[in-house]
Amino acid sequence: MSRFDEVIDRVGTHAMKWDMMEARYDVSPEDGLAMWVADMDFRAPDCISQALQGMVDHGVYGYFGDDRAYLDAVRWWAEERHGWQVEPEWIFSTHGLVNGISMCLQAYTDPGDSVVLFTPVYHAFARVIRAAGRKVVECPLVLEDGRYVMDLDEYDTLMTGAEKMVILCSPHNPGGRVWSRSELQAVAGFAERHDLLLVSDEIHNDLVMPGYTHVPMAVAAPDILDRLVMMSATTKTFNIAGAHIGNVIVPDEALRARFGKAMSAMGISPNSFGLVMATAACSPEGAAWVDELVQYLDGNRRLFDEGINAIPGVQSMPMEATYLGWVDFAGTGMTREEFTRRVEREAKIAVNHGPTFGYGGERYLRFNFATPRARVAEAVARMQAAFSDLQ
Image 1 (tube, rainbow, N blue to C red):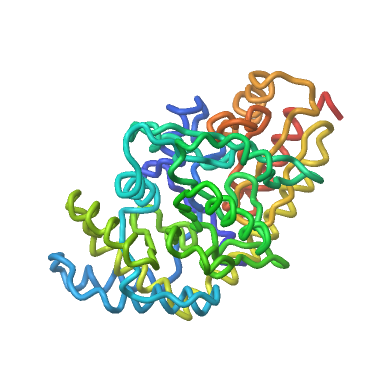
Image 2 (image 1 turned 180 degrees about the vertical axis):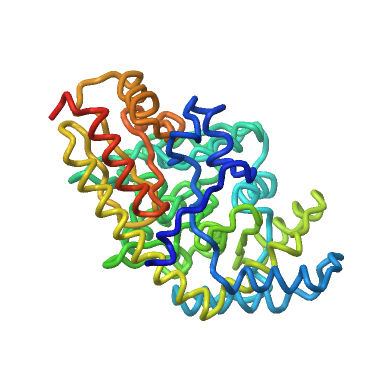
Protein backbone atom coordinates (compact mmCIF):
# COMPACT_ATOMS: atom_id res chain seq x y z
CA MET A 1 0.00 0.00 0.00
CA SER A 2 1.25 3.49 -0.83
CA ARG A 3 2.12 5.60 2.18
CA PHE A 4 -0.49 8.04 0.87
CA ASP A 5 -3.34 5.51 0.93
CA GLU A 6 -3.63 5.59 4.72
CA VAL A 7 -6.89 7.19 5.81
CA ILE A 8 -6.12 9.42 8.80
CA ASP A 9 -8.99 10.72 10.93
CA ARG A 10 -8.37 14.46 11.31
CA VAL A 11 -11.71 15.30 12.91
CA GLY A 12 -11.28 16.86 16.35
CA THR A 13 -7.61 17.73 15.76
CA HIS A 14 -8.22 21.46 15.14
CA ALA A 15 -7.90 20.79 11.41
CA MET A 16 -9.62 23.69 9.65
CA LYS A 17 -10.33 21.47 6.65
CA TRP A 18 -12.39 18.99 8.67
CA ASP A 19 -13.39 20.75 11.88
CA MET A 20 -14.69 23.91 10.17
CA MET A 21 -16.43 22.35 7.17
CA GLU A 22 -19.83 22.20 8.88
CA ALA A 23 -19.70 25.82 10.03
CA ARG A 24 -18.59 27.02 6.60
CA TYR A 25 -20.56 24.74 4.26
CA ASP A 26 -23.09 22.90 6.44
CA VAL A 27 -21.45 19.60 5.51
CA SER A 28 -20.96 17.38 8.54
CA PRO A 29 -17.59 15.64 8.92
CA GLU A 30 -19.47 12.58 10.14
CA ASP A 31 -20.66 11.69 6.64
CA GLY A 32 -19.15 14.42 4.47
CA LEU A 33 -15.90 14.80 2.54
CA ALA A 34 -13.61 17.80 3.06
CA MET A 35 -12.25 18.95 -0.31
CA TRP A 36 -11.84 22.66 0.25
CA VAL A 37 -8.87 24.09 2.22
CA ALA A 38 -5.59 23.58 0.37
CA ASP A 39 -3.81 21.21 2.69
CA MET A 40 -3.33 17.47 2.25
CA ASP A 41 -4.65 14.54 4.26
CA PHE A 42 -1.20 12.90 4.24
CA ARG A 43 1.44 12.64 6.94
CA ALA A 44 4.50 14.82 6.43
CA PRO A 45 7.71 12.96 5.52
CA ASP A 46 9.60 11.21 8.31
CA CYS A 47 12.53 13.62 8.09
CA ILE A 48 10.25 16.42 9.33
CA SER A 49 8.71 14.38 12.13
CA GLN A 50 12.15 13.23 13.26
CA ALA A 51 13.40 16.83 13.38
CA LEU A 52 10.41 17.82 15.52
CA GLN A 53 10.94 14.80 17.76
CA GLY A 54 14.49 16.00 18.32
CA MET A 55 13.13 19.33 19.55
CA VAL A 56 10.68 17.56 21.86
CA ASP A 57 13.40 15.32 23.26
CA HIS A 58 15.55 18.36 23.97
CA GLY A 59 12.65 20.01 25.76
CA VAL A 60 13.84 23.60 25.67
CA TYR A 61 11.96 25.87 23.28
CA GLY A 62 13.83 29.14 23.39
CA TYR A 63 14.51 31.86 20.86
CA PHE A 64 15.86 30.59 17.55
CA GLY A 65 19.33 31.74 16.52
CA ASP A 66 21.80 31.02 13.70
CA ASP A 67 19.61 30.36 10.67
CA ARG A 68 22.48 29.38 8.36
CA ALA A 69 21.32 25.77 8.06
CA TYR A 70 17.84 26.96 7.12
CA LEU A 71 19.14 29.40 4.50
CA ASP A 72 21.46 26.75 3.07
CA ALA A 73 18.55 24.30 2.82
CA VAL A 74 16.39 26.85 0.97
CA ARG A 75 19.28 27.66 -1.40
CA TRP A 76 19.98 23.95 -2.02
CA TRP A 77 16.33 23.26 -2.83
CA ALA A 78 16.03 26.21 -5.22
CA GLU A 79 19.09 25.15 -7.19
CA GLU A 80 18.62 21.36 -6.99
CA ARG A 81 14.92 21.31 -7.83
CA HIS A 82 14.47 24.45 -9.94
CA GLY A 83 17.86 25.44 -11.33
CA TRP A 84 17.73 28.79 -9.55
CA GLN A 85 20.74 30.17 -7.68
CA VAL A 86 19.75 32.15 -4.59
CA GLU A 87 22.02 34.05 -2.22
CA PRO A 88 21.34 33.74 1.53
CA GLU A 89 21.06 37.50 2.03
CA TRP A 90 18.13 37.60 -0.41
CA ILE A 91 15.92 35.45 1.85
CA PHE A 92 13.41 36.80 4.37
CA SER A 93 11.36 34.36 6.46
CA THR A 94 7.72 35.32 6.98
CA HIS A 95 4.72 33.70 8.65
CA GLY A 96 3.63 32.07 5.42
CA LEU A 97 3.11 33.65 2.02
CA VAL A 98 -0.18 35.41 2.72
CA ASN A 99 1.80 37.26 5.37
CA GLY A 100 4.52 37.73 2.74
CA ILE A 101 2.02 39.35 0.36
CA SER A 102 0.82 41.60 3.15
CA MET A 103 4.39 42.64 3.93
CA CYS A 104 5.00 43.43 0.25
CA LEU A 105 1.94 45.69 0.24
CA GLN A 106 3.27 47.51 3.28
CA ALA A 107 6.79 47.80 1.87
CA TYR A 108 6.09 48.78 -1.73
CA THR A 109 2.66 50.44 -1.96
CA ASP A 110 0.62 53.12 -0.23
CA PRO A 111 -3.05 53.19 0.79
CA GLY A 112 -5.17 53.93 -2.27
CA ASP A 113 -2.72 52.35 -4.73
CA SER A 114 -3.99 49.70 -7.11
CA VAL A 115 -2.71 46.12 -7.36
CA VAL A 116 -3.19 43.95 -10.44
CA LEU A 117 -4.42 40.35 -10.27
CA PHE A 118 -4.97 37.87 -13.10
CA THR A 119 -8.34 36.43 -12.12
CA PRO A 120 -9.74 34.05 -11.13
CA VAL A 121 -6.90 33.56 -8.66
CA TYR A 122 -6.17 32.55 -5.06
CA HIS A 123 -8.77 34.37 -2.97
CA ALA A 124 -6.44 35.54 -0.17
CA PHE A 125 -4.69 37.97 -2.55
CA ALA A 126 -7.75 40.19 -2.98
CA ARG A 127 -8.64 39.85 0.70
CA VAL A 128 -5.35 41.21 2.02
CA ILE A 129 -5.11 43.88 -0.70
CA ARG A 130 -8.48 45.32 0.27
CA ALA A 131 -7.80 44.94 4.00
CA ALA A 132 -4.65 47.02 3.50
CA GLY A 133 -6.65 49.83 1.94
CA ARG A 134 -5.42 49.16 -1.59
CA LYS A 135 -7.57 48.61 -4.69
CA VAL A 136 -7.82 45.40 -6.72
CA VAL A 137 -7.60 45.63 -10.51
CA GLU A 138 -8.77 42.38 -12.10
CA CYS A 139 -7.33 41.31 -15.44
CA PRO A 140 -9.53 38.38 -16.56
CA LEU A 141 -7.82 35.22 -17.74
CA VAL A 142 -9.04 33.86 -21.06
CA LEU A 143 -10.13 30.29 -21.77
CA GLU A 144 -8.30 28.80 -24.74
CA ASP A 145 -8.65 25.10 -25.55
CA GLY A 146 -10.02 24.54 -22.05
CA ARG A 147 -7.18 26.17 -20.13
CA TYR A 148 -6.30 29.68 -19.01
CA VAL A 149 -4.09 32.07 -20.97
CA MET A 150 -3.31 35.75 -20.46
CA ASP A 151 -4.37 38.50 -22.88
CA LEU A 152 -1.70 41.05 -22.05
CA ASP A 153 -2.63 43.33 -24.95
CA GLU A 154 -6.09 43.68 -23.44
CA TYR A 155 -4.62 44.15 -19.97
CA ASP A 156 -2.53 47.05 -21.27
CA THR A 157 -5.77 48.92 -22.00
CA LEU A 158 -6.99 48.43 -18.41
CA MET A 159 -4.02 50.20 -16.81
CA THR A 160 -4.60 53.75 -15.57
CA GLY A 161 -1.27 54.61 -13.96
CA ALA A 162 -2.59 54.11 -10.42
CA GLU A 163 -1.30 50.52 -10.41
CA LYS A 164 1.90 49.94 -8.44
CA MET A 165 2.14 46.15 -8.14
CA VAL A 166 1.15 43.00 -10.01
CA ILE A 167 0.87 39.62 -8.27
CA LEU A 168 1.36 36.46 -10.30
CA CYS A 169 0.36 33.01 -9.05
CA SER A 170 2.85 30.57 -10.61
CA PRO A 171 1.84 27.77 -10.97
CA HIS A 172 -1.69 29.08 -11.09
CA ASN A 173 -4.27 28.43 -8.39
CA PRO A 174 -7.07 27.54 -9.11
CA GLY A 175 -6.53 26.79 -12.80
CA GLY A 176 -3.49 24.55 -12.38
CA ARG A 177 -1.53 26.21 -15.21
CA VAL A 178 2.24 25.91 -15.38
CA TRP A 179 3.13 29.15 -17.15
CA SER A 180 5.63 28.70 -19.97
CA ARG A 181 8.91 30.59 -20.12
CA SER A 182 7.53 32.82 -22.89
CA GLU A 183 4.37 33.55 -20.87
CA LEU A 184 6.47 34.51 -17.86
CA GLN A 185 8.63 36.78 -20.00
CA ALA A 186 5.47 38.43 -21.35
CA VAL A 187 4.28 39.13 -17.79
CA ALA A 188 7.71 40.59 -17.02
CA GLY A 189 7.36 42.85 -20.05
CA PHE A 190 3.90 43.92 -18.87
CA ALA A 191 5.36 44.87 -15.47
CA GLU A 192 8.10 46.91 -17.16
CA ARG A 193 5.71 48.73 -19.51
CA HIS A 194 3.56 49.88 -16.61
CA ASP A 195 6.35 50.36 -14.04
CA LEU A 196 4.93 47.72 -11.72
CA LEU A 197 6.63 45.77 -8.97
CA LEU A 198 6.13 42.09 -9.83
CA VAL A 199 5.47 39.68 -6.95
CA SER A 200 5.63 36.04 -8.08
CA ASP A 201 3.97 33.67 -5.60
CA GLU A 202 5.40 30.23 -6.42
CA ILE A 203 4.12 28.23 -3.46
CA HIS A 204 2.94 25.36 -5.70
CA ASN A 205 6.24 25.16 -7.60
CA ASP A 206 7.03 21.60 -6.47
CA LEU A 207 3.58 20.14 -7.14
CA VAL A 208 3.89 19.88 -10.91
CA MET A 209 2.41 16.98 -12.85
CA PRO A 210 4.64 14.67 -14.92
CA GLY A 211 5.45 16.15 -18.31
CA TYR A 212 5.51 19.76 -17.10
CA THR A 213 8.34 21.89 -15.70
CA HIS A 214 8.04 24.94 -13.50
CA VAL A 215 10.35 27.83 -14.38
CA PRO A 216 10.98 30.40 -11.61
CA MET A 217 10.23 33.95 -12.74
CA ALA A 218 13.75 34.98 -11.71
CA VAL A 219 15.14 32.40 -14.14
CA ALA A 220 12.72 33.21 -16.96
CA ALA A 221 13.21 36.99 -16.74
CA PRO A 222 16.58 37.79 -15.08
CA ASP A 223 16.57 41.31 -16.57
CA ILE A 224 13.79 42.53 -14.26
CA LEU A 225 15.33 41.66 -10.89
CA ASP A 226 15.17 45.35 -9.94
CA ARG A 227 11.37 45.08 -9.86
CA LEU A 228 10.93 41.42 -8.84
CA VAL A 229 10.02 39.81 -5.52
CA MET A 230 9.95 36.00 -5.42
CA MET A 231 7.98 33.91 -2.95
CA SER A 232 8.36 30.23 -2.09
CA ALA A 233 7.51 27.92 0.78
CA THR A 234 7.72 24.36 2.03
CA THR A 235 4.21 24.45 3.46
CA LYS A 236 2.18 23.28 0.45
CA THR A 237 4.87 20.91 -0.77
CA PHE A 238 5.26 19.02 2.50
CA ASN A 239 1.81 19.54 4.06
CA ILE A 240 3.08 21.68 6.92
CA ALA A 241 0.81 24.71 6.47
CA GLY A 242 0.37 24.96 10.25
CA ALA A 243 4.07 25.83 10.54
CA HIS A 244 3.33 29.22 8.93
CA ILE A 245 6.75 29.56 7.34
CA GLY A 246 7.49 31.11 3.96
CA ASN A 247 10.28 32.77 2.01
CA VAL A 248 10.20 36.22 0.46
CA ILE A 249 13.27 36.29 -1.78
CA VAL A 250 14.43 39.71 -3.00
CA PRO A 251 17.47 39.76 -5.33
CA ASP A 252 17.64 43.57 -5.67
CA GLU A 253 19.46 45.40 -2.88
CA ALA A 254 17.23 48.50 -2.89
CA LEU A 255 14.05 46.43 -2.80
CA ARG A 256 15.56 44.30 0.00
CA ALA A 257 16.20 47.37 2.09
CA ARG A 258 12.58 48.47 1.77
CA PHE A 259 11.25 45.03 2.66
CA GLY A 260 13.63 44.70 5.61
CA LYS A 261 12.49 48.07 6.94
CA ALA A 262 8.84 47.00 6.78
CA MET A 263 9.61 43.73 8.59
CA SER A 264 11.55 45.56 11.30
CA ALA A 265 8.66 47.96 11.81
CA MET A 266 6.31 45.02 12.33
CA GLY A 267 8.66 43.17 14.68
CA ILE A 268 8.33 39.97 12.66
CA SER A 269 10.55 36.95 13.16
CA PRO A 270 9.82 33.29 12.30
CA ASN A 271 9.03 30.62 14.86
CA SER A 272 11.61 27.95 15.59
CA PHE A 273 9.29 25.01 14.79
CA GLY A 274 8.69 26.25 11.27
CA LEU A 275 12.38 26.83 10.64
CA VAL A 276 13.33 23.37 11.88
CA MET A 277 10.58 21.69 9.83
CA ALA A 278 11.49 23.55 6.63
CA THR A 279 15.20 22.84 7.08
CA ALA A 280 14.51 19.13 7.41
CA ALA A 281 12.15 19.18 4.43
CA CYS A 282 14.61 20.75 1.98
CA SER A 283 16.81 17.68 1.85
CA PRO A 284 17.38 14.58 -0.28
CA GLU A 285 14.93 12.69 1.95
CA GLY A 286 12.32 15.39 1.43
CA ALA A 287 12.94 15.38 -2.31
CA ALA A 288 12.37 11.62 -2.55
CA TRP A 289 9.08 12.00 -0.66
CA VAL A 290 7.92 14.78 -2.99
CA ASP A 291 8.69 12.65 -6.04
CA GLU A 292 6.45 9.89 -4.66
CA LEU A 293 3.79 12.42 -3.72
CA VAL A 294 3.59 13.91 -7.20
CA GLN A 295 3.15 10.47 -8.77
CA TYR A 296 0.34 9.73 -6.32
CA LEU A 297 -1.36 13.09 -6.94
CA ASP A 298 -1.15 12.46 -10.67
CA GLY A 299 -3.01 9.18 -10.16
CA ASN A 300 -5.65 10.99 -8.10
CA ARG A 301 -5.92 13.65 -10.79
CA ARG A 302 -6.56 11.07 -13.51
CA LEU A 303 -9.20 9.32 -11.40
CA PHE A 304 -10.90 12.60 -10.52
CA ASP A 305 -10.88 14.01 -14.06
CA GLU A 306 -12.16 10.80 -15.66
CA GLY A 307 -15.05 10.54 -13.21
CA ILE A 308 -16.02 14.22 -13.22
CA ASN A 309 -15.77 14.58 -16.99
CA ALA A 310 -18.12 11.62 -17.40
CA ILE A 311 -20.94 13.79 -15.99
CA PRO A 312 -22.67 15.56 -18.91
CA GLY A 313 -22.16 19.32 -18.77
CA VAL A 314 -19.42 19.16 -16.12
CA GLN A 315 -15.76 19.71 -17.04
CA SER A 316 -12.61 19.58 -14.91
CA MET A 317 -9.91 21.92 -16.21
CA PRO A 318 -6.81 19.97 -17.36
CA MET A 319 -4.36 20.04 -14.45
CA GLU A 320 -0.69 20.82 -14.99
CA ALA A 321 0.14 21.53 -11.34
CA THR A 322 -1.28 21.70 -7.79
CA TYR A 323 -3.80 19.26 -6.31
CA LEU A 324 -6.79 21.52 -6.83
CA GLY A 325 -9.40 20.55 -9.41
CA TRP A 326 -11.17 23.53 -11.01
CA VAL A 327 -14.54 22.24 -12.17
CA ASP A 328 -16.82 24.06 -14.61
CA PHE A 329 -20.58 23.45 -14.24
CA ALA A 330 -21.75 25.85 -16.96
CA GLY A 331 -22.65 23.03 -19.33
CA THR A 332 -25.30 21.73 -16.95
CA GLY A 333 -27.44 24.81 -17.54
CA MET A 334 -27.93 25.04 -13.77
CA THR A 335 -27.68 28.15 -11.65
CA ARG A 336 -24.70 28.45 -9.33
CA GLU A 337 -27.01 27.90 -6.38
CA GLU A 338 -28.36 24.67 -7.87
CA PHE A 339 -25.09 22.96 -8.76
CA THR A 340 -23.55 24.06 -5.45
CA ARG A 341 -26.56 22.66 -3.57
CA ARG A 342 -26.17 19.31 -5.29
CA VAL A 343 -22.47 19.11 -4.43
CA GLU A 344 -22.91 20.13 -0.78
CA ARG A 345 -26.37 18.80 0.13
CA GLU A 346 -26.59 15.66 -2.01
CA ALA A 347 -22.96 14.61 -2.55
CA LYS A 348 -22.03 16.00 0.89
CA ILE A 349 -18.71 17.41 -0.29
CA ALA A 350 -17.31 20.68 1.10
CA VAL A 351 -15.62 22.64 -1.70
CA ASN A 352 -14.44 26.19 -2.39
CA HIS A 353 -16.94 28.41 -4.18
CA GLY A 354 -15.71 29.84 -7.46
CA PRO A 355 -16.74 33.51 -7.02
CA THR A 356 -14.32 33.90 -4.09
CA PHE A 357 -11.49 33.65 -6.65
CA GLY A 358 -12.64 36.76 -8.49
CA TYR A 359 -14.00 37.52 -11.93
CA GLY A 360 -14.45 34.39 -14.03
CA GLY A 361 -15.00 32.02 -11.12
CA GLU A 362 -18.80 32.22 -11.08
CA ARG A 363 -19.45 28.90 -12.81
CA TYR A 364 -16.77 26.91 -10.98
CA LEU A 365 -16.13 24.98 -7.77
CA ARG A 366 -12.64 24.02 -6.54
CA PHE A 367 -12.01 20.46 -5.32
CA ASN A 368 -8.95 19.42 -3.30
CA PHE A 369 -7.98 15.86 -4.30
CA ALA A 370 -4.88 15.59 -2.06
CA THR A 371 -6.44 12.84 -0.02
CA PRO A 372 -6.26 9.02 -0.04
CA ARG A 373 -7.38 7.60 -3.38
CA ALA A 374 -10.31 5.77 -1.81
CA ARG A 375 -11.75 9.16 -0.84
CA VAL A 376 -11.27 10.50 -4.36
CA ALA A 377 -13.14 7.48 -5.72
CA GLU A 378 -15.90 8.08 -3.16
CA ALA A 379 -16.14 11.74 -4.14
CA VAL A 380 -16.45 10.83 -7.81
CA ALA A 381 -19.18 8.28 -7.05
CA ARG A 382 -21.09 10.83 -4.97
CA MET A 383 -20.83 13.45 -7.70
CA GLN A 384 -22.08 11.07 -10.36
CA ALA A 385 -25.01 10.14 -8.14
CA ALA A 386 -25.83 13.77 -7.37
CA PHE A 387 -26.01 14.57 -11.10
CA SER A 388 -27.41 11.21 -12.22
CA ASP A 389 -30.41 12.82 -13.90
CA LEU A 390 -28.03 14.32 -16.50
CA GLN A 391 -26.69 10.93 -17.56
